[in-house]
Length: 206
Image (cartoon, rainbow, N blue to C red; front, side, top):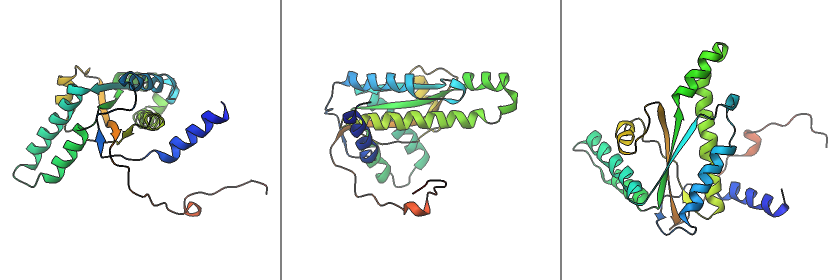
């Protein structure tokens, strides 16, 4: 790895933030997003090399359809209650250029449970950890392209409708949704808890 690429990676770690104010004017060709998704799937580690993560990348009308589905399901839940805050969120996600859907393949997880019974109760946990690594890798990669994103969790509320709309196999479990797009407004200032309260180091000679 060259120093230039290392700096880029470090900057992406430092600058990755939750961006809610999204636009659909991507600074890169949409195919670049697909390329990132492919690379994330190929190179993100997974427990026992299970490769259980699955992605669906939505653009344009299909992207908007996802957030229409989500809004409709939320309205059913809220009923006559105040929907203004949720409506604002749905509009901000819809205004983006696309969404990445993250899934875990339950058939893969079940297969590992059957083969390695000693760890059977751990494989669902490890699958969620695997998905989290894919989510973070995707988010960080998007930041290197100056593409903003956030991570959302409207599952399981939208699972059935999403499966029907986008031909999702029954054994794919929806884990998270990542709307992305151009950065209309940057994230606000972030505060940090003291590192000495969050980390310990042993055995390092001065």
